Length: 382
Image 1 (cartoon, rainbow, N blue to C red):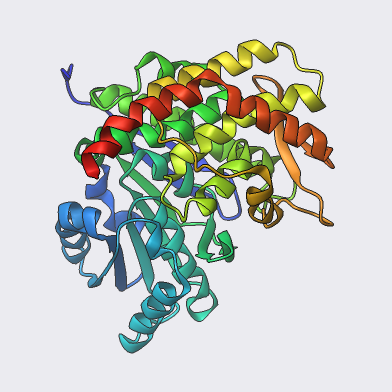
Image 2 (image 1 turned 45 degrees about the horizontal axis):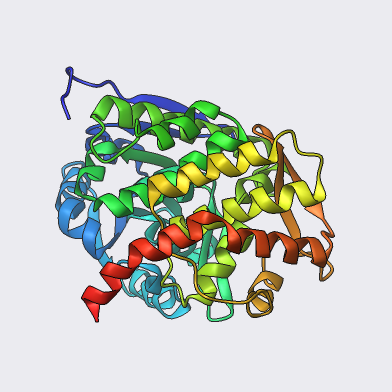
């Protein structure tokens, strides 16, 4: 990795009511205080991000005269539990936080979801600023105002829409990510490419967006991905219509996560969900080139190298699919693709089409490739 020189941050707005700014680039964390309201700030950070960047964030706030309450939560999906959420609310109450105080979420997508829901619920809503520190959080959780915790019955079943006051994506924080975690996050960037910007999908599968990319490339691609999501959110802030397209790959992906007991990482699960959608789409729609679409997602999987999906049958996945938030009247709704840039929300897909796509998905050669690639690691852990 070689830096050509200083990299200017990219800036754009999410045009909801009220609009809020997004800053992307190296060093934007230093501007945290200028974009955070309130005299007191609860800095909610996961263990990894808090250890690496918590002091910098807290010092930036304290230097501006803020009182900072530092709250640490576990890293990983296990933090997105009602018990953790309730404990954080209690900490705010015991510290005497008021409606004009604020929360800062520092960490990955789990932290953004959890801290955002804390802010949404406390005193019926206080300000939250997101400082995502993973590719996944920058591409997905930080923008859009969807907050949630999980239930044993499914992912993100309890939450609220609560837009942040600002989002700061400091690409320096990505340097500390394990390569596999970095690549898992690029699945959401790839998805944005399928929806609206083919250059994003190509950046992922070509290796232009990779752990060894320089700050300029990271800033460019993550800002482009953020702009795709910002445009969709601006047109449908509460997911009443086209915003559902952002769930491409997520219906099956969330079911696979739940069926694995959340051992399958979100990015890995969505990668498999995108492959399934590439098989289901031509069974329901007139698709421009089904084989080309499947080949493109296959390139994604070979680039990202997700862990294999859980060995679950369609009938075993059905209860989790039935709890998908897009389900209406007992019928699953799928986000499918006619072609890149042409997503559609499909209602009432016949079950025989779903099952046929599942069988084709299981027979895809990348399934065997990924299973074989994971075998040495599995043996080493035994």
